[in-house]
Length: 244
Image (cartoon, rainbow, N blue to C red; front, side, top):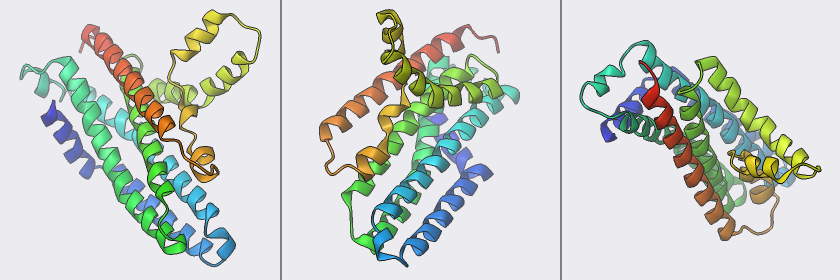
């Protein structure tokens, strides 16, 4: 399992999209920092909000495309057999891939997060909210990768990407509508079993909130762990029945 994760991390270092996303993040952070530094009133909230949004957008796209590319390329090139013939179980294979992808995307977030924190410190002094915002993004990326691993065992590549974005953007809106409507408790209960990314709304909680709750961070960590592990176990059950 650890060897698979290591192989994925090495693969990420050779991936053009990985380095492109890293470069774009750093470039936009510097541009935003330079722009906001010209106006003292914009140095605070605007850079913090823009910077975290840039890191979130770039890394959620990196998570989607790097995850699907890594998993589907193994199937297309039959390189998955390199591991399976060495008596690696399919559970170990999926968990290894998941760990390697999280490590790779997390490394990119760490590098760009350091740049973001340095720029924010230069503009306004050190703010612990920067680190909390990066923590929110990392947890969200972890759950996103787990869901993408599950979808990759069920759908084709394009459908997996579409299904993820549908879940990401529309399920939260659907839940908001249904929970306020007169619908059965069964429907509301079913929605609670689906991963919901609205809980990672860092802009309202980190940028605009006056105080940050450690209790909520604990809830978010537990929520990420439960749904990520559930997604991976479901992916393993599906993958065990899949003909390669």
